[in-house]
Length: 63
Ligand SMILES: [Zn+2]
Image: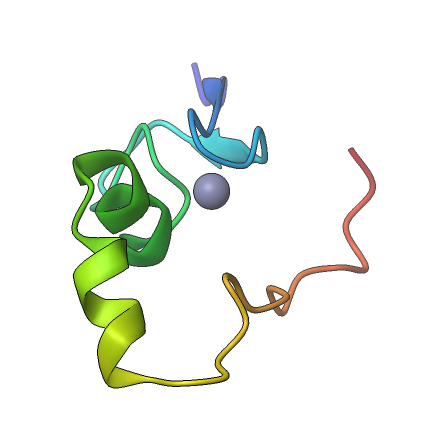
């Protein structure tokens, strides 16, 4: 009964848990959500030189 539903983030294809723990689902994070909404371009202007995305903290997880 505890089956976890995983969905791929539309932006970066990273698996995202489909539950209340993922407020930005189906996106993995707010950043990816902003990218999809087209708002990232505007935010990027305010952060010159910032990478398009930052590595997540759970890299130790195996897909
Ligand atoms: Zn993502």
